Image 1 (cartoon, rainbow, N blue to C red):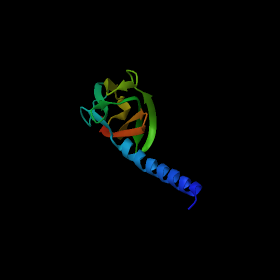
Image 2: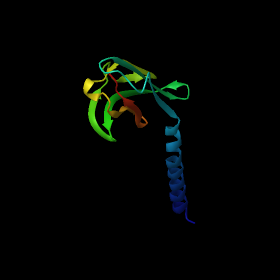
Image 3: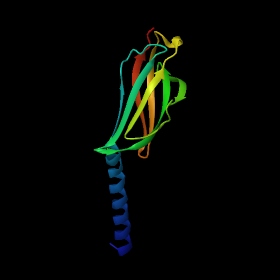
Length: 128
């Protein structure tokens, strides 16, 4: 085998190894959504908390909201307290409208990180 072919083979193997490791590195990032209830009250504050970590290290990102009905996005909203965060994001006052009472919806927190986008879905049914 010529020197050039060995070099090309070595480069190809190196690229393949890096491509195989990329998803493993991304998989370490943990992003979670915590809310007080799956049945928020219309017109009242519904606090949420989002955490993003890579092991014990805080991960920075940006949050925005989407609201889904039967799997389809029906509304987009920006986070009311600003969407940028490092490690922990808290929105103490997500307010659900009265027109959402009794409708099964999905609250989606769209979290943009350097490693990619994560969608955190949370089933809700707004009550009076």
